[in-house]
Image 1 (cartoon, rainbow, N blue to C red):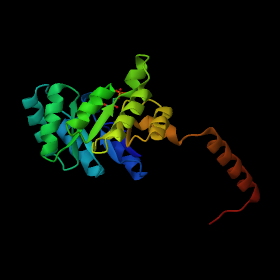
Image 2: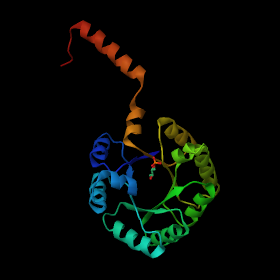
Image 3: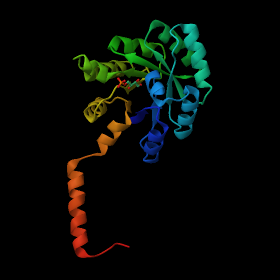
Amino acid sequence: MKFFVDTAEVSEIRALAEAGLVDGVTTNPSLIAKSGRKMAEVIAEICGITPGPVSAEVTATDVEGMLAEGRYLREIAPNVAVKVPLTEAGLRTCRALSAEGTLVNVTLCFSPAQALLAAKAGATFISPFVGRLDDIATDGMQLIADIVKIYRNYPHLKTEVLVASIRHPIHLIEAAKLGAEVATLPPAVIRQLLKHPLTDKGLDAFLADWRKTGQSIL
Ligand code: E4P
């Protein structure tokens, strides 16, 4: 499973990349706003940290505007994935940009039907939002199960399932069990994945016993 980092904070991405935990990055207009930086500048910097896909989202809502923004964004670096919303204009933009060889991430997916349409439009990635569905008392992980099943029924569809709006490690584990190709994770969730109280407790006990020996390895 590929791990994308869901942030526009360059220092976080750099640290996680050094640990070998970054296969790509996703941003959205809210994350860019939170970074307080110019979008083109921050996307360029992120693309220099990872060779993997870096999603940069358009903000126009019409096809002409999305196409213009998408063509501008993809010039920033060859690993930019243009992110478009799951609207009719977004799908038309996806189709056109995909035909031009651009990576396209179709975002704000909340139903299996929408995911099927995105795949037919040639999306590189479909981003179903599990956390936001859970927030409205709807099973977000069932959406992932449905999309994975549908895509497997039609092997000619090459779109990868990029599980988004992940809020905790269980979301990731359930998505991995379902075979989703990618998960995009906030840095805080990646850090949560590392932690286990028995690891901390076991390490403390080993080090306490080691100190009693009076030895040092070097
Ligand atoms: C990433 O592509 C999405 O924009 C992001 O995962 C949304 O997460 P949120 O629902 O926590 O804002």
